[in-house]
Length: 124
Image: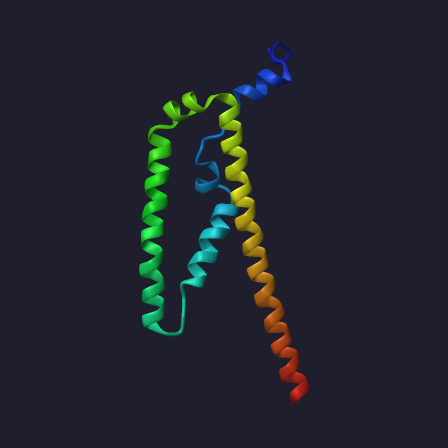
């Protein structure tokens, strides 16, 4: 049975939902954790303000995911196979950009903390 399909037929049958980068995978989980960590602040007022700003964004993302899942078949039909491939690659690129930002933020904090520790130990 596997010999009956060519590589192009198998590739065309593969299903990648429109919301794959937003709903699953280590990239989306780490993005959610990073956003959650950045909401924390020493001041309760600042934390509440950040949370109040993040909630509309979460609601908008949830609404977009709902629309994508609800109307995926109609949307994919109108896009066609080439349009679907473009949307998938574009969403994967956006997720890659988020991952690069997360790595950059982590390295930035690490380097700053290391420099602070080094300056504290040499200043004593």
